[in-house]
Image (cartoon, rainbow, N blue to C red; front, side, top):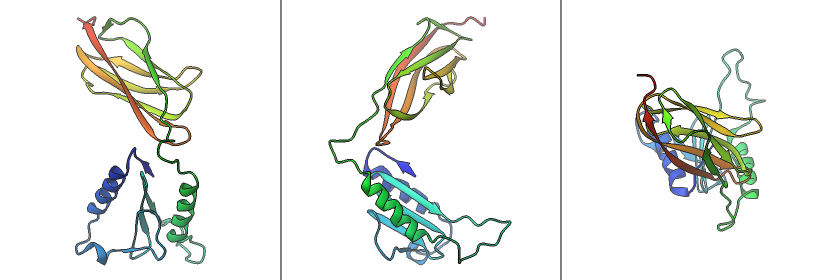
Amino acid sequence: MHVFDALPPARSALIHALSSYSPSGRLSEHFRALVAPVGEIALIDINSQTLHLVRSNCYVQLRLVPNQLVKPDPAVMQPLEPLAHELEDYLAGNTVEPGQQRLPNLQLGISGSPNLTVGDVFKLTIAGDDFATFDGGSNNTSAVICAGPKLGNERHMEYFVVGMGQAQLSVHAAHEETLLPVTKTCKVGIVLNSLL
């Protein structure tokens, strides 16, 4: 499941997934609509092994993966269409009305000296208590590399200074209830090269 901040990216994710489908011919030769509609768009392959679903800002792909050690028993396999309807019911019951959507409330702070040097390790502290998950990065990995999130009493991302220059650090988080994403950024500059 991929959750986006709007409907168009969810549709784009579906288009991307379908464009990577390799058999030749028309799409209608390989996919069909569900017997009972689900979401805005729902397609299942003709073998009922893969189902694609777009509902609001979510793109979902359900796939039956056969276990190579045991031959699948059709009598006990759960068909994808009923699973899609169960998922639709769950999503419909947890939909947040426009204007009621809540994004994570994040505040970022850099610990330590503002004058970073090559070889330094520093952390970007993430304040806020309404997000379920977070991740981060750097737009200039020749200057700063993100080592990943560190959990504990204090939530933070750890970074390594590996070269001179400037970098924009980013933290991406999803709200704990709505799963709506938010990205916060801050800039850092490396002013000294201590490894010379």
